[in-house]
Image 1 (cartoon, rainbow, N blue to C red):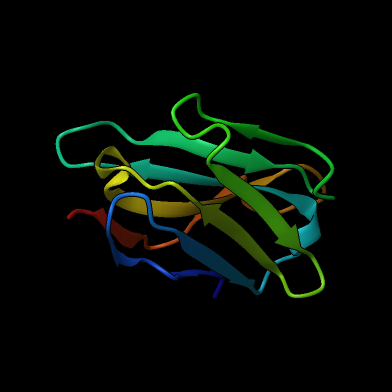
Image 2: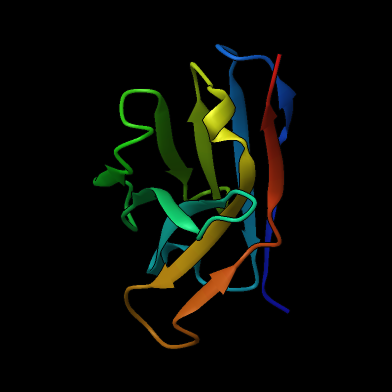
Length: 120
């Protein structure tokens, strides 16, 4: 069974940092672009950051540019989200998504989410 397992969420004060990880298993990780999304209560899910299959291209939502960094390690089948200068408005459940770029199989997988709470 395909798995995307997020970890690293938690509670942090404004201005603090967290590093999220998403470990993938049972699919060809390098065939998939990866992304982080988030969903706050009462709001739609939004793209936070995305990264290409080889990690040579990234994109970010406007609200997190210059504060968050996405990266991946294809040898470890893991994608990361380094979050710095966190703000209360970053509070949300963060989801990892795999989107197939090549090869066969389902077009996308989602993780179960990890809660990030930014509060003083």
